Image 1 (cartoon, rainbow, N blue to C red):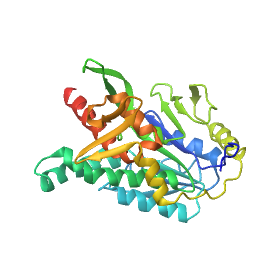
Image 2: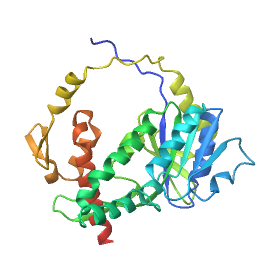
Image 3: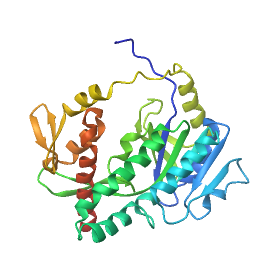
Length: 302
């Protein structure tokens, strides 16, 4: 069953984060030039995606409010079926906090279905978000998403809230899903790699160019050709995942070195750890819900 590990060729998923005016859209187009030949863009920024059509050859599809996950998923699948090499999603933040996005839907569901219980409404929202994320990750295209940045906070051990730099306007923990995550500075439009599974970039990258995309493409092509994975029987897979997660009514527990722990009693770092580990997949929705609650509390303190 075991064999020598080797890196396979794959489709990279890249995130570009920055405040308004940092150059996310233009940087995404530059990177895409080096990643592939046939490029598409999903534009949620009122047509701004076409501003560079005189410089580069690419196709655009606009999404207008409501910014639902269904609209995003349909556009992604259309691009994949059309055979594009690279898809730019500009921006992924609108599906979270834009008009008709998930946060707005969460408020509406809490009000109409759960008598104002916003916590309960996440049970409806989380599957929508997860389906969109999986559509991006499983698509047979290189995908570059842009996300707006905001001030980020953490909860310290003594339960105080502390500022810790910038974070994307999206659900907590989404950054763990990408192959590379670049943060772009507004002043000089220079990028730093805050996360890089390719190990190609040593933190500071400078201004993004087509050569950056070509460097990533070369790394991809050095991998072995991937074959279809062996499927694990459903009953066997269930045993493996449930060894680490259990439910008791509405409570979710995860098992670690210290035994079983109620996920609602975990801190920010513990929740992020749960989200980063596949053996806790059945608890990811609960962990995301807890992180969202912390985030909402932090925003209320601003």
